[in-house]
Length: 531
Ligand SMILES: Cc1cc2nc3c(=O)[nH]c(=O)nc-3n(C[C@H](O)[C@H](O)[C@H](O)COP(=O)(O)OP(=O)(O)OC[C@H]3O[C@@H](n4cnc5c(N)ncnc54)[C@H](O)[C@@H]3O)c2cc1C
Ligand SMILES: *[C@@H]1O[C@H](CO)[C@@H](O)[C@H](O)[C@H]1NC(C)=O
Ligand SMILES: *[C@@H]1O[C@H](CO)[C@@H](O)[C@H](O)[C@H]1NC(C)=O
Ligand SMILES: *[C@@H]1O[C@H](CO)[C@@H](O)[C@H](O)[C@H]1NC(C)=O
Ligand SMILES: *[C@@H]1O[C@H](CO)[C@@H](O)[C@H](O)[C@H]1NC(C)=O
Ligand SMILES: *[C@@H]1O[C@H](CO)[C@@H](O)[C@H](O)[C@H]1NC(C)=O
Ligand SMILES: *[C@@H]1O[C@H](CO)[C@@H](O)[C@H](O)[C@H]1NC(C)=O
Ligand SMILES: *[C@@H]1O[C@H](CO)[C@@H](O)[C@H](O)[C@H]1NC(C)=O
Ligand SMILES: *[C@@H]1O[C@H](CO)[C@@H](O)[C@H](O)[C@H]1NC(C)=O
Image 1 (cartoon, helix red, strand yellow):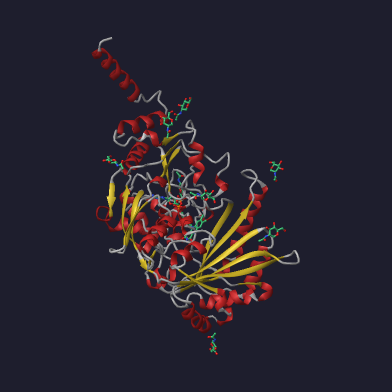
Image 2: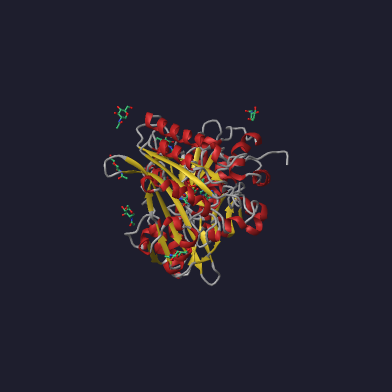
């Protein structure tokens, strides 16, 4: 065959391959065709697309799934997983998913408690951002640009690499992704001094529902407001965040004394409620309530006051003696170290070097259910007695009480979508872990039922009208959108718990920037026509 007829044949073939004929091509085929049509030869996307036919599909899919409850055989799987290496791949994924009526689940660190970053009840693909993880720290400017797929541990590490007096008020567990964290608010041991992670965001780049790349200037202040605590996944795919760094002293102190109820833990945790939010802003004392074994083979409850102080032991001791003498904190309970070592140790790795912060596969995976509450008035001692009774009904119950106050009370409720500011003494996180055996097994039912009963029991003691909840402690029990029906009324049930009156502004922004409701999930902000 001559070369001209060869090329004619080739172009005929490529037309046959590329032109979708609606009646016979499956959505999978037309989606892949769309990707290859839009693929840039200098940065091809096909090598970054996994379907169940690819041998590494399964390992990529499971790589960052934290909650094994959503790693069951009947959990719906994505048609495709795309792992962008280039920001243009994210744009292509959005445009082709939209063209083909596929929903997108955006995955950062994969820690969503309800698995919303990697599961859906409709045909969907996962855009997994974990390859986009470059972090550029600018000490002079007191800021960092962080790509959306980075983890908190990577951010801490890159800051500490350049300075021992700069830090970031991120979360406790270093494998958490920056995007879920910042998009939902995000707190940790420096919450009282500096506020949320989201409070430090000063710019962002994202891909919107039209596949356009926006930054703070081009997205406008409404959208920029919404993605800092309103759940970025309702609005687009974040490519990178610019955050302010915060000052940390060269030496911080950590301490975590504990007491069992036999040693007076009930009185102590009751007392803690009166001081935790009023302490000096440099002190953060979290109370962890858990079950523990007694030496005689029984079970009891232990309260651990897991804490960080932004300063030395010498400054801390008189301060604690004055404001929380009941704790009886002694010099030998305290350890001085750098901020980065404190972050590593409090994250659970006292025996590792700081390089552990770069390890993404450390978090031991398990099966769990979590819920949250906000407390505005100290709860009575008798209520704790009731909690202890319930704790003894399961193997691994935990409650974490995280103090607010200080900086958190100075930031207005509407400054970001995260509304839980002044007036909150502390936030409760309820956790229960269990060993799962199948999807709807008895153990799963028993434990989910248990935590719902505990939540019901707590009703009189926690915030009301609405009963507030923390978006990053995602809980589908508090309400979900109807599939295919983005009713404002329905969404406002869960929306007001997470956002209070900020919910209305979120709906307004959503309706403006994504009126077709392309970015949606079980708890995404609805788009309405009547704005
Ligand atoms: C072990 C553990 C410890 C935790 N500790 C803390 C803590 O100390 N403080 C705290 O505040 N929270 C904590 N959390 C909660 C955590 O902040 C949230 O689960 C957070 O949403 C996780 O972010 P991720 O990126 O890892 O999760 P993902 O599951 O990947 O994402 C969470 C949500 O963000 C969306 N999202 C992710 N990336 C993007 C993006 N690029 N653009 C748009 N949307 C995106 C997802 O679609 C999903 O809706 C913890 C969770 C776990 C499991
Ligand atoms: C998955 O398989 C398809 C078809 O065999 C191939 O084109 C694609 O490059 C593979 N993806 C990856 C990431 O290897
Ligand atoms: C997977 O392979 C099967 C058979 O080999 C094929 O029919 C199907 O189209 C492939 N799916 C994708 C998404 O490539
Ligand atoms: C990303 O893609 C753009 C074009 O879409 C290209 O100019 C750029 O070089 C690519 N970057 C990388 C790191 O591949
Ligand atoms: C408590 O004892 C049980 C066995 O009775 C054991 O399985 C569990 O690991 C122990 N828990 C702790 C925290 O030591
Ligand atoms: C604690 O304060 C009391 C007085 O309020 C004082 O008598 C005591 O010496 C102080 N203890 C320490 C360790 O500072
Ligand atoms: C990360 O931690 C896991 C679990 O401890 C370990 O198996 C793995 O080798 C570590 N990875 C790196 C790169 O150190
Ligand atoms: C798991 O469930 C199956 C039945 O679904 C049962 O046969 C098996 O014994 C269970 N295993 C455990 C460890 O409970
Ligand atoms: C949508 O939800 C609203 C509120 O729950 C309900 O009144 C309405 O009937 C629903 N519509 C459809 C089509 O399901």
